Image (tube, rainbow, N blue to C red; front, side, top):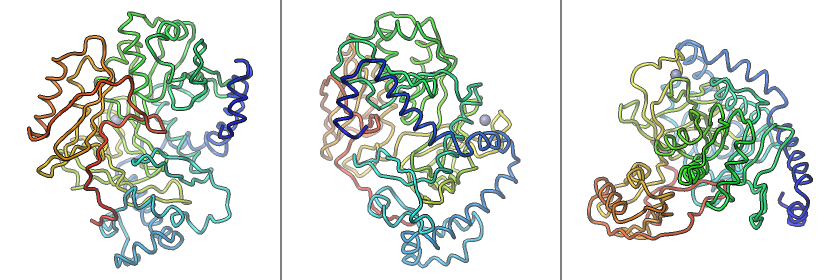
Length: 465
Ligand SMILES: [Zn+2]
């Protein structure tokens, strides 16, 4: 609802009209996401996930070579980049040749948006989607309708592993604002009749509203909850603190967009009485990775190739993604800024696709130490601070960090000591640490909380490998 007059009219209208307006928006989303081949895609994906390792490798190789050629021939950005690096495109014949292509970063994407759309799609109607971006500037990504349908089919294949079906009644913890932020009376949720979902306003999750939201959850029968783990965790924390029990339990909780840290997972699962699963996806559709029934992350190979920097070393490395699901704006050897640890051995679920045991916090989320190291894993440090509701590290200068804390009622000196000890274990003792209590931590436009915001950065652009 970008039009502010329309937006004001929406917020002023009675709740039932807001629900109708929200449902008509739901119809628009449904047309975008689920028509035009979604069901066929889903059916096919449920077969291909059981392919043999050799069939998967053969498929990926063919798609990789095709998308690189397509990019070179029709996308100005890649033609310039590969010419600049002296890449002979005829020599890209297999996955083993991938290293010959330079990697790209979000900065490159941001600086070359116009040149990233394939000439083959100029004049075609493309879907424009916003990504959260890492610098606070969202990127606009152009996707074909087929790409969006494939992406939603991949997301639904993940849910189908847990017995969930499109059309199941569910609750969304998202970043949209379906309820005016100044509204002080329930309901703090809106209904989308078309997609059989309710949308909870995450901006209304507060101590004051905890009882109302608990009563609402208990009066409904949701098959699953889905959305930002940080928002679901916030609610779980408040319900737990107040001792409000959830008696009408969902079957599953599907986490996405943010990393699901173990501390979040444990509390969410306990408070809502349901297991939690997650998938790793992105608006750019440069790839996708989804958990299986055994809790491991499988590469959704049908839409892309996932490389790990430094080979498949046991300690893991940065992810480099190549996606062929969206030919209108392909991402080739894209350093998304996340890292993952490959699973040693094969997964017990029987799927042969490449598998990770862990996907780690964003690589941008690092603190730079005075001796030049980049220290990640702040989410793990936060694990030790048991009485904080939310935390963030802000690094303004090389020798000082500010720890922003939304304190729980029992937060105290011990929590600060725990943080300091764990932080120093990772980053050393050269940096000063100051704590700042805040009432909330800013979320990015897409609703994410960054573990670390650093003004001290050594990130370069257009890195080549
Ligand atoms: Zn598995």
